[in-house]
Image 1 (spheres, rainbow over the protein chains, first blue to last red):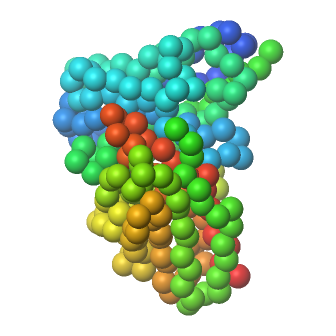
Image 2: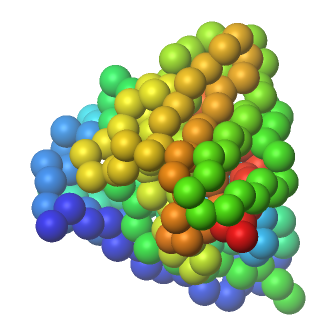
Length: 119
Length: 110
């Protein structure tokens, strides 16, 4: 079935780095735009980053621009988020989500991976 | 980009209808018919309920409907059921491959 599975979360110190992965299955990954969306504990959803199907275009929320890098490997059906210079306010569950291209909605979500930034 | 404005909570009794509003600006909700709504139960991933303002994905009950007027979008749930109790988030495309979410609304079924 159509599925997204995130991994790579964990505890990291402020200023540290972490790389999240998202494995896609059940659909032609290379046909779809993808995004990362996060949710701080007890808070709402926040869009983080977007990547086009061929990686030709990316974009980021102002809160992570210059610190986070989104990428994908269509041969491996995988999406990544490299997070550098992490701050306490980056603590959240990170979801990868598939984007319905023309509708700009997120139709498939992973289960999320928790990132905790704390000393 | 500021978050869209949603009421923090709404409630209704089984069988009743409720409406959740989502107010943005002329740069997001007002500019695009690309508002979507997500349902999230505790500890679970969000689920797409409405896209392009008023379209329902396959498998979503027709008790869920969406609309938009100006800078405000709305989600209406009719015939409330206990299983509808969850958090609901609106989201709007904001141009140049950017999105903005609402702060979320907790729906309580009394």
